Length: 115
Length: 114
Image: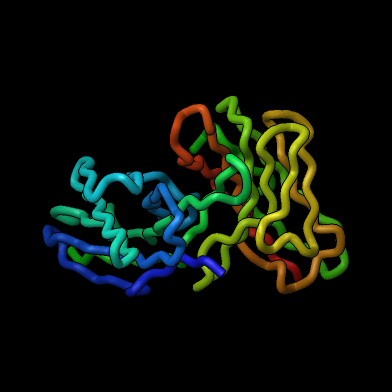
């Protein structure tokens, strides 16, 4: 079946460094992707999204890159801060029938920022 | 997100008991979802509802049932709880008219089945 996965389950960086979190997806029909951040004890929170007709999208300190050729998605966090420590999930939207779509989530990457 | 609330936040129960988890939202969204989260497995969809009269099974619906009592309320039931249903459960909502499928999550319910 279709799946969304992550290359690295854990990532440890020094405060101030840039972080890159990767995600591979297998559904070539997926047209929309989201990155979520989940802090300990909380529900996932939206970070940034990108449509399949785009290669790059930037937010505040975050950039999402989409490479449809190799079905790869990445989240870049600039000047990583201790508050960025969390689990990061990618999610893809695929057609679940008719015009109804639902998200499929990856397994998550734990980002730890060392002061 | 305070607009999506879940009760209870924590629950410990015994095998065979019936459990109901409640979700309420004030966002006015038509779409609501129930997920479970297990370590190393990410979020898996249990059931989803695109409006009050619409209920759909997700990838792991066995052992669960849902009720969409109103646009704002979506409850998840475990008819006879078993230990492998011990997990973190999240409710979420989304608004298809926004042009995006961003889902807004509640704070989660930690369920332990002994």
